[in-house]
View (spheres, rainbow, N blue to C red):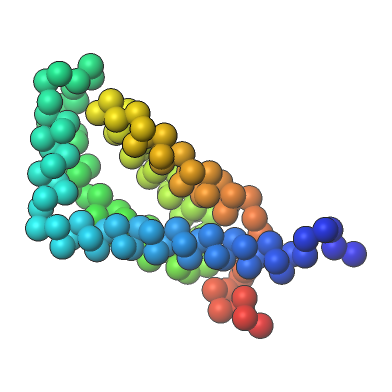
Length: 139
């Protein structure tokens, strides 16, 4: 006998969360590629503000801002598959924690707090049982 919520329902919930997570990053990554460098330029300017309480060396934020679109596309594609799903969910969580830290460094506290639900979404997807194969939800 199953609990109050069936395993199949929990697996479908995990799949919906994971596909939402994947689409979120794929759309974000593609939009950054088509921003013609404006995403990178905007945040380089933000991080180079001398009025910040914590100033990072320019190479650190410049390098990270350069790889962010690739990370988003890579993690997004990986989340579409069921291969290593928990590993890539943890990568999702770590990625959003890094974005939250960045916003805190920029002293954008409201933006940082808005990232917390994305982290919770990842934790929930991690906790739920997953399908063995992405197409198995329909069968």
